[in-house]
Image (cartoon, helix red, strand yellow):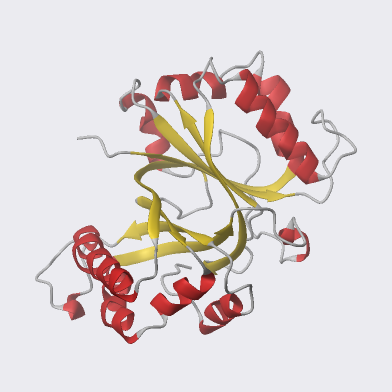
Length: 289
């Protein structure tokens, strides 16, 4: 099932959280080949419709309303290493709002309603994930949420996006980023080297270990980290506890880490897998060519 618009219940859930807290919204987008003909845009591509009509219009509305919104991250998605069937995103956008009040002021305004149809008409699938900058109350929040229907946690190898297979045809010297979405286990599974810990504790050991051990070898740097509190557009069972962007100095160095059977595969990946119950791994870089 594809998801393009938020439900009224999702928007109402935003109202129930602290209106003054800053939020960051992860947008994962799959463009239609062609924009909805009902928009009357003369066979325009979904991508062009999104950027030229929706994003340009929404940015203008945001500026006019004085929301203070700013783009934290924007890049093309090259492939989805870990994803469920049908998740093959085209673009990733992270927007920061100085408060939930500012976000709600934008998306519930009459001015925004006039351009929102261009978003709907340009996409075939999307996610909108509300995040905060510090661990929220009740973290990890996913423990009592519906269980994932199609969990993905076995590490690189579960390639359901055909574009992954072409990774060695892409520029190996190009710096690249990986968006990680993590749903934590309540307790770690045995045998991963983090036995007897909470999932949050186990993943922290993985995160700090990779960031330390591969800082030079793979040019790893965690450039963004946030804590999801709600999936506003997407399946109810997609609940995340952490969102991170791991930056790699080059695509070749990233792959060298993933394929390091003497260290990463033995000492790090088992800790990750033991600590989570679901995840996504999304390669995102500036479009080539």
